[in-house]
Amino acid sequence: MKYVINAVRILFLALFIFLVMTGRVRMWLIIFAASLAAALFSGRIYCGYVCPMNTLMIPTEWISKKLKLQKTVTPKWLSSGWLAWLALGASIAGMMFAKRALHRDVPVLLIWLAASVIITLRYRPAVFHNLICPFGVLQKIFGKNPVYSMRVQEQGCIGCRMCEKVCPSDAVAVRSEDRKAEINPALCLQCSNCSQVCPKNTIHYLGGKK
Ligand code: SF4
Ligand code: SF4
Image (cartoon, rainbow, N blue to C red):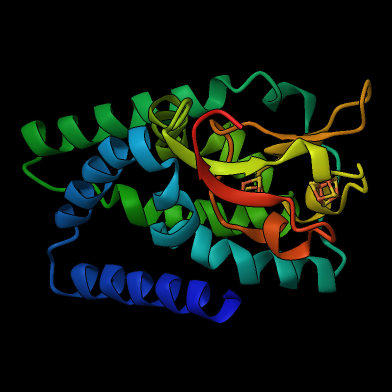
């Protein structure tokens, strides 16, 4: 399963690179727009499988941990999430200004791709996914209550927190009151890391609420 998921990510990364090299990177924005509509039904699949930033952040995090660069604490000034909205507004305004006033395209996607890698060298991926990424802000809204999502079948959960440890976006947490894990679909990238490590095989991609 892990190999299939990584192969899908690499294929989409290759498509992204191809579009950049052939000057058609704007087509990626069409893919992104379609992914927002899809998120209503299937959750943030784009973030977990299609997004070139996430695909590059995975090896970047591995390098960061190996070099002991990663800080586990999230800076307080970032915690409210305002920066992601600012990033979204600045990206749209920058694109429109450059197009109208300078008759040029701003390589917004490439700028954010570089930022995601640099930030992930220092901070956990959840910091970029949840607090900085301008695309993630929109995915969060559209993927808040999808028909299908990764869900915990609570009766099987033993509260071991293995799922929490491998989640790149802090989307799963074990409740203190009953020691059962719960996934927040708005944050979930549908990556399946958690279901792969769950010793009770109690996390699945399911329709409905639980
Ligand atoms: S890994 Fe599985 S059993 Fe452990 S807390 Fe998460 S959902 Fe529950
Ligand atoms: S909750 Fe599971 S599927 Fe969702 S982002 Fe976290 S590890 Fe991935």
